[in-house]
Picture 1 (spheres, rainbow, N blue to C red):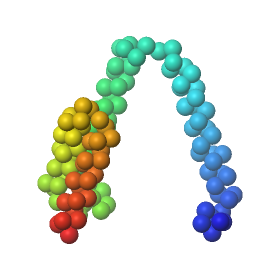
Picture 2 (tube, one colour):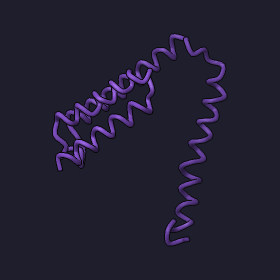
Picture 3 (cartoon, rainbow, N blue to C red):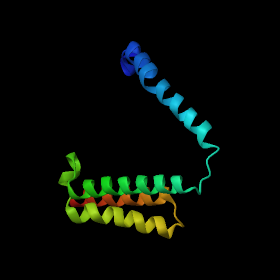
Length: 114
């Protein structure tokens, strides 16, 4: 079993240094966030900023693709998110359906192109 997982000490350090500090802040945010109104102007602004940052990251990946995505033609890099967006709206705003459709279009077209 240790050959598959690797060094148990490294996993322990990763758990202590990476997971536990993260979970403390997540639980604190859950506890403090439960009393905040979802419709407040602050949370509407935070949601808008988070959406803008995500849109910027997606646009950067489409325009300047990193790694293996650079070998995918530009039309396919733009068609896959468009198909995912269409599936998202066609399935009454199902994020899962949009992501799966976009991935399937990307993988199927890349396989077909060779």
